[in-house]
Structures are given as C-alpha cells and as structure tokens.
Image (tube, rainbow, N blue to C red):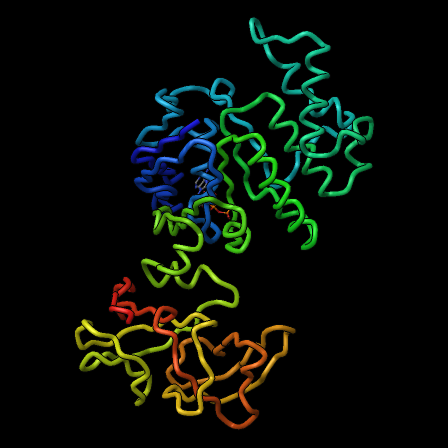
Length: 366
Ligand code: ATP
C-alpha cells in the first residue's frame, strides 16, 4: 500500500498565554512512501517523528494537509478503520493474558461483518507468531518472556490483523545492544517477507540507516532530506544532516575558500573548483583522511586506538569545531607515532557548507 503525505502539518496550540507559543510539531510534510518499502523516520528528540506517525495512524488529527492510503483519502478516517498496525517502545502487552491471547486480542475486537470464527483467529495468531518466531511460547505470560520476545509478541499482535501499513515507534529502545541488533534484523526480515509498507521511527541514525530502504531526516518539524541511506550519507544537503548521520560523526572545521582552494588554518588542503571566495564550515568524514607525510592538513596527534582491521586516530587542530578529530584508517596505513599527524583528503568525503546558512556548497570532485 502506497502512503502519500500531502502538506501534512500539526500545530499544538499553546495551553495558555503563560505557557508560551504554539508548537509546530510537523511543518508541511510532503512525501510518497512507495508500496512495500521500509522508511526510517529519523531525527533528534522533539523533531516531530512520533507526531507524524500518530497522524498516519489516525491517533492524532492533522492541523492541515492530507494522508492517502493508495488512492483513498484517509485523513478523516478513525484509527480503527485505517488498517494500520502499531508497535510502541513499551510493548504494552496485557500481563494477565498468554502470548496467544495477547496476539489474538485485536481479532476478538472485530465487529459485525469483520468478525472471525474462533478457529480462524487461532490459526491467524499462530501464523503471526510463526513469522516472528515465538510460536513455541504461545502459552507463556509476558512476565515469562525476555524483552526481545515481548517485542516480538507486540509485532505479532500488530501483524495479526494483516495491516496495510505497519508503524513502529522506537520499537527497539528498551532492548539491550545485542538484542537491538538481532531484533532490527528480524524486523527487516518480517517486513520483506510480508511486503507491508512500514514506517519506523527512531532517533538512532545507525539503526535507521541499517534497515531502511529510505530515510527521512527531520529537524524541528521540518523535513531536511529524504533518500536512500547511503545517498544521504554521501551527499548531505546541509550541515545538520551531515552531522546527524555517521559513527563516528563527521569532523567539522572552520575553513576559507580563496582562489578555488580550501584553507583550513593557513594550509591549502583541497582544490574546490567553482566555489567563490568565502568563509565556510567544512565537514570531513572520518574515512576521508589519508595519512600522508606530505599532506597539508597537519593535526596534533592525541591517540591511536586500534580496533582490529581499522585504527581510529584521534587528533586536534585549532580550526576544528569538534573537541577531537577522529579519522578511521586502515590498520596497514597507521601513521607513525609522533607529535603530529599529516593528512591529505579524499575530495568526495569533504563537504562545504555556508558559514551562516549551513547549506551545502558544491564543488566539482575530479
Ligand atoms: P521523541 O524522539 O522525543 O519522541 P519526536 O521527534 O517523536 O521526539 P514529537 O513527540 O513528535 O517528537 O514532538 C514534536 C514536538 O511537538 C515537540 O516539541 C513536542 O514537545 C510537541 N508536542 C508533542 N505532543 C504534544 C502535545 N500533545 N501538546 C503539545 N505539544 C506537543
């Protein structure tokens, strides 16, 4: 099912004059989510991710704009008639019910023509449980399950009604690191197997990048960039997006462009043909540094952390806006220990941004 958002806006009114301004939680969000894809909605706390999800689910009414499922305008349709499955951060399972009863619960609530015979409900619950691989735990109570298993029950419960759209709001936040990894792979597998259009909300960029067909990066209610994870990482539209994606994060410097060359401090570190003379903010991905004795960017070496195949070189520079510069280097190219480390740069890993507006300034990469 294709999901189309047209100028979707949500404004929360101010409660009183004292409480201050109204909040524009989502501002003019337009995007078509293609059928059968997994979309990661990504951004820092308060950027409007959950509000967007709740509007798609029908739990919250938009202040403006429209939502279409396929060709149908569902903007005014109530949540129970939209055919969405919702999974929240806290699994919200009924503690006194078994796994089977929890999964069957949404089917038992169906009314009128939608009502199902008991055998079919049990069969559907088994199918959903099998999909998330908990069919051997059907008679347990939630308290007898691990966090990851509980989240699978919640996903099975969302799937049992065969939703047209699956909405996941930070579904992995309560899991430990290992389970997070495992469960996110599970979610990807289930999504691919069922082909259900899925929207996944997270503030964790790594999580979103790893499982999404496309990511939507939001800031203060406004969509910043939409694209395939790798494309957005390789080609960020502004400094916010560049800083939000990537571990370790992008390294940021003050720089100046003069005569088609980029200067960091006094050193001309890169040719940037076609860029006008101006002060810029420079972002360099950790994998964009090449240790090079003749390299123009000379940093003060703080530490070299060996991480197996790669090494992380930690250094400082007076023009750096981050407290430490982190470069990721192949272990074979490890720089010699010393007071300084010199780098040349990979041009396609260096991004320029306007010093004031923080928008990307493009240059030709040879
Ligand atoms: P988080 O990751 O912390 O859940 P989020 O990106 O999901 O954040 P939202 O929950 O969508 O953000 O909130 C967006 C903005 O709308 C925030 O500034 C929030 O304070 C505000 N907001 C959300 N719900 C309400 C409400 N019911 N009344 C007033 N303001 C609200």
